[in-house]
Length: 213
Length: 264
Image 1: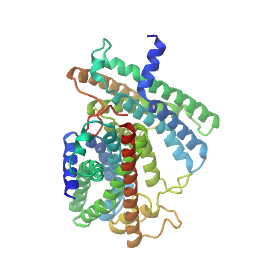
Image 2: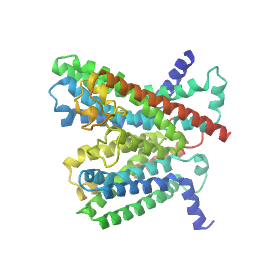
Image 3: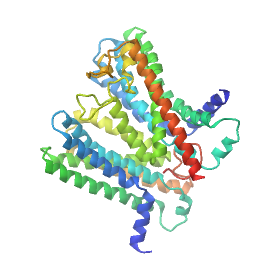
Image 4: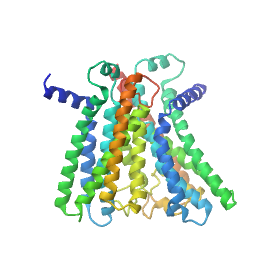
């Protein structure tokens, strides 16, 4: 098996939403920023800093939850947390590319006086939300609590935190440090889950079926 | 009818025993409690009943959305899984009560902590202010606003969950919900349902019956769909929300059956 087939397999395993969610969120944020100055600016700034991170976190949670053949993975020489990390590289790469394209195109429109601040905020929030979403998915073995957590975190940032903490590095640094710590906890949880033989990806339903689509 | 009640009972119990739905609802419930206790738009009102009405607006925005997010994959799972649906098909119940119960049972489970938190907040405000009006306001808003909105968001998210991949359906539910509830005309560059009698925020019954501040009904907009607040418009708002919930539920039921037959 060459590296190309190997990565193509992992990309297929992630499903279309790992690609579609970050790209659609970036398009939505660009549309909101380009739509107009004035009253639309608050909306544009909120969507710019939050839409792409939230979509990335949802994509990461969906990728992590989607594993119908955990027992097979546990029988392989590669440790399961390493497989999850490798799989997450795809939504991560898509999100990074979308964020760079979004930042470049927004800078070209010239609507923001400080595009670097918004970009930093976006990156920190993306790491934080993805880590939190991964941990919630690992703990509950379903992507639903991760979604609730992501929505609550984004709304808490917009409604409460933005009034207290200045945007930019002051938010981005603690956010990304916490996010990396949460992601590490989640990966450790996957190792533990593997040993205990628990199954992932059961969704909220009582029925046993294939993993969450 | 008895069959539906039993399905409701076992579905609600199954949701209690595997607390995934609570995991999705609790972060948003805690956020709305925090905002109710600290936000000037809620705490700034002198009338305690108005404070409860504003808190009910928050609950109906965040917690109801959480319920929808938690139950997005219900219909899809029932149509995709093998084994349990066949077993349930051998019981003397129709397919309609089964899908209705599989949505409404966990809905009741998910709403229980939300209702408990709102009532707790109402009791605290009632005791501090020495009046029973906040408690009445909370009860009225739970029945006339939170329950219909939760039915609508569950049916809508279930329908989207059948049509789209689940993560995409959840993202779409969030966007549509915020557009329909908190996108007032002054703020929005696109046409919006916020402030109309179609809005699932149920602002009209909250203002008319639960003492919420006037601004939450029409949201400073005008037009034929944003009439003056009264008993008739409040009833119309609730009836439209319930009608939309029934339509979404029927479409979701139909789509799940088509999907299941196509897969079989």
